[in-house]
Length: 446
Image (cartoon, rainbow, N blue to C red):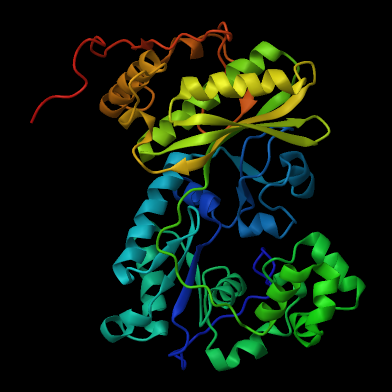
């Protein structure tokens, strides 16, 4: 796989025999950083890092100019600034990223109904059935890249191949702002010279093991006996990388990928050993998880607490509920109990997270409740706040528990830390000035 700084770039510059390369992998180039540069065109061509300028922050994204200094996403900001002291740090704006993601994804849907979204900035497209109307794979991919740039000012790279794995690898080799088509009969020649780290499923530890046996390239893996690979890294892992090394990848485009969980987490500016502050943060995160679940018409049964400490060790604890829920207050009550049972109230905490698993898309608990509903008051309060937010904006109303004095933390698009009584957070809606009274219906009939 090519380096993330764009070195080793390889592209298809003219139409080729691409009838067997019907799978596209489209990946936006340095997406978050590129979106920020739309607001700062004077910084184009300079090393720009997206993130919070803090010793405890991590890099959200970096331009290719910054990557040449060894700066990568998820790297501690302190390390990034040591490697590239002249880097310009810009604060992230996730609402912008979601907007441009939606615009770009709609373009993909115009090309083919077979689109598999992979997060916010990449997707697989099967264009096999689009050729008769839109032309060859080369013509489709070239037109799509031009349209993305013309309508957003952003660049994307596209890989085309007969399988998802090779298409994704090709798009990484084409970065930035390139197109690489790998016809089926050229797959082996494309794959075998590349390093084993380019294989899906080969992380740092697996690569170290394989290199210890003298395997350095995908070709080395391909020509190693299957039984040897299975002994070295396990039955399933050995079989998987052996198949991929020969370009065998039977996976098709999945047009719908259901979320397995919904969660939020936050990293504090300084390690926090105040149990009350952690409980307040658990309440805020639980409220966010509940909002997302209700917006998606989903509910979940397993509440998961995540704690990371000052030495970067991380633990998770979970509890499965008798009935699924989509209510922030119920999630908070359960995750607070998990936290208090963990015995970590006196341990300084670097990161805390709340997640709900075992999701079901059957309307959530708000739409289907039993004869006796212990959460009726909470449900009424939260659905009222949902309606007010829908009418007046997401920041127009919040729980009284989340009002108070803010404490620094590193989170994405979240409210400041609030002081309150964590044992029994009030759930009544708090309506800001210049909005109608809560008693006024939050909608008007047509």
